[in-house]
Length: 199
Image 1 (cartoon, rainbow, N blue to C red):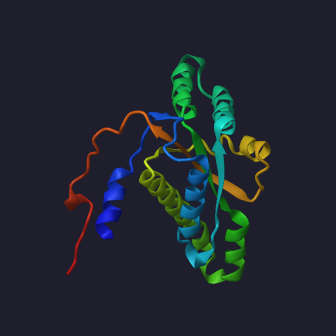
Image 2: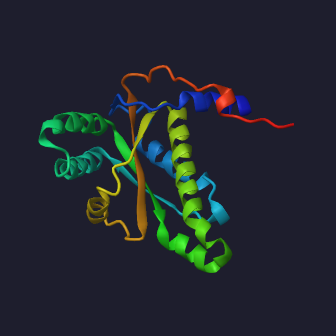
């Protein structure tokens, strides 16, 4: 089991060249994302992670909203490069937007006052774990993905466009789709700079 997990962890990469031809049905993708998030651990089993899964024209709409927000802040002479990058994200089959429910976080702060300062940090742990779990689950299905962060720039548009509750805080958005071109070689820093083993 450990070898299988590590093989999957090595298979999961940031794939930028994505297409719309998913190797499995959309319903399988949706259920895979849901189940990965359901099974992701969270502090006090708070289950604070939330997700918006966008496919087809709704996925494209998200990237058009992002483009319009970036147009307001990116200098005109630099915008073409930015827009081209967004075209690459929009070329994917879909995206999953990850949120953390701030009402859950606040409720835990009130219920366990001694740990109040930790719950926002633990919420960030929860979303990170949920994102990694989804990424691994998609990789296992042969689906490529990349993770982006245009929040909080797009938060208001997302909330308005998809009727997202105000207490859901956007933490990241993952594009997914068929793998058009694989990731390049991955470099690793020296272990002695990264790990300490004490016996």
